[in-house]
Amino acid sequence: MARRVLAEGCVGETLAVLQAAEELKHAKDAESRATLAKIVADETEHACLAYRFIAWASRDDDVREALIATCTAACT
Image (tube, rainbow, N blue to C red; front, side, top):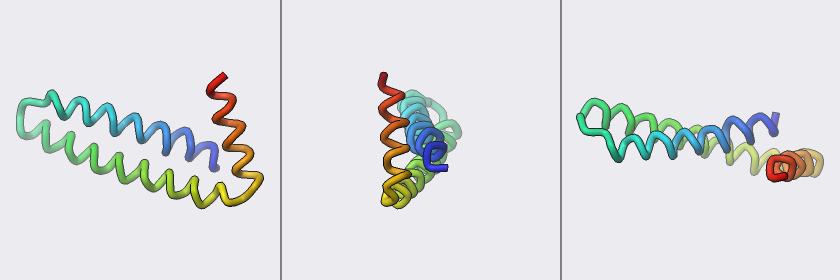
């Protein structure tokens, strides 16, 4: 579960925040800006929840080692 939260929550939601924030910078009409601002807020909340979960879950040695292995494998 922690690996999935890492990938989908921490990485995926953070990327969604960055993408929506970039789109918000270029949005012209008020409706688009309001929608994108809401998306940025929602995705930020989701990412923060994922990071809090990972901080909690990684207190377990086995979970922490699995997360480290996952990150290491992603970088090689």
